[in-house]
Image (cartoon, rainbow, N blue to C red; front, top):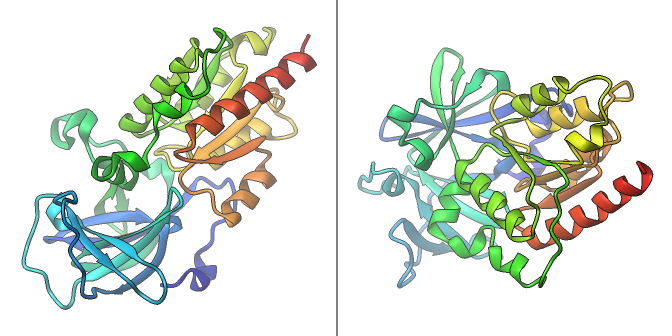
Length: 310
């Protein structure tokens, strides 16, 4: 499926829905957000790369682009002999193109994020799970994989780097309340550690947009909002409520929260996604893993918010 052939499955902004492409590995059913998929193709010959991660199969060059191939069955512990009928799912997120080898690709299903639940820690590996959620699609249970976490483990240098914050130099302590919605345990920790390194000391971390929204809604009606929440940072892909739906609720014209600065910080910031976020009222939209840029934007938005609420 090429990028220019997705027009029939694009979603309206803020509906809290996701298009899931299902695929199989070792007879098990997995899923990936269609927004991450650039192309589906028959597996091609791959050139091995020395000293790479064990799950990195190598590289190949369709047309004019060199793309790294990840052996997803091997990564998931379901390695089997490679087959000419295997499929490459070519993805585009975090400003990177990566192909993942899978066994077969099934249909695409549109579901609500409310139908995606975090897997039980007793069966998912707890905090180290590579499953971002379990969904039911057309009566089938589908494991939605956390591809950002997979790539962060295989190539840590491509993920959030606290060194970017260290390069900003000494910073004054900032105790403004910052609320962050991020479902990935790994990325949530990375973001939290980086923002604390930037001397943001009053962080409130939420595992999805729904829990952040419920906490917002529970704030006293007669209180001064800026004392409770001065800025919101949200991912897009999250079980229960995604970042676009959260943005829509916060920024609606009738919302008492609409003046709170909101940053979408996601691996999915394409031109199309940027237009969606802008239409929903996001103040800024940044691509992971640019944590240094995030801190700069936070400084600017917090200063502007403070000046308008003196």
